Image (cartoon, rainbow, N blue to C red; front, side, top):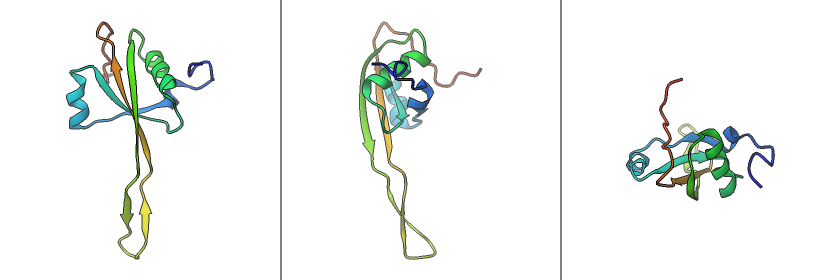
Length: 105
């Protein structure tokens, strides 16, 4: 079942692109990095990318869960946490169209 068949909006699966030096280096190889919803699966991520950007064919999806850092509070001796983040590395097939992440509409 795809994300659309389950009634999920593709924009609720793909939250935002990851902007970092490492992710920019992977763009030349056709690998795009996105922050995704923590409950999303690889087929849902694939279907969401193909629904948001028509003409894009996803070859593979790799996911990783990043645990939130423990942060010290300045004024009191307590600790807080940053939220956990799930990332997806989406590899496009070589004959696929490329994703323009920074297009202006």
